[in-house]
Length: 213
Image 1 (cartoon, rainbow, N blue to C red):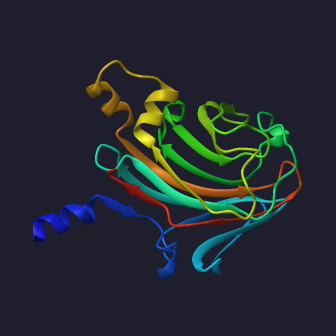
Image 2 (image 1 turned 120 degrees about the horizontal axis):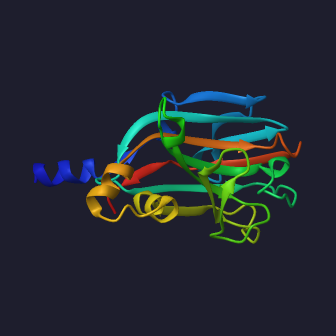
């Protein structure tokens, strides 16, 4: 019984735990004025509220995740209002009411850094993919929610990050090679930003977890 319990516990990693103010280990990184992040009770649940007024800053957690053990990224989110219809593939439109990043940090070898950005898009259809307007092909933007998503509605998401990395950055030809390239991510981030479009956004995030299945 004890062994079974250990396996169940190790199969899930909660990176936030908003009921317990679980963002203490997350760092606030500012790009262009501060988006305000705070933990609130919203719609009967503890959530991270993000309010952006012509600002761009995010919460960043530096924690290595072994995707061979816990490949699935799980989270929920809600947009309280829509952004304008932006050209998100341009620098002037690179704003999102909500997004969750995962990053493989290349360190000094910047060209080895790779990131998946799961976004709530204002004008793309769901499941569209494009290169980031600023970082190019090293950052893949994925519209997990698109222009038809409902405002004021909680959506629960689940992504196999390991498979997404292989799909969008290239299959290395064997499981061994793929594990060498994509087994670990180093950084997870949350960001709501409106600096390029000089607009306003309000969104809510539920707990962010990695799981085995």
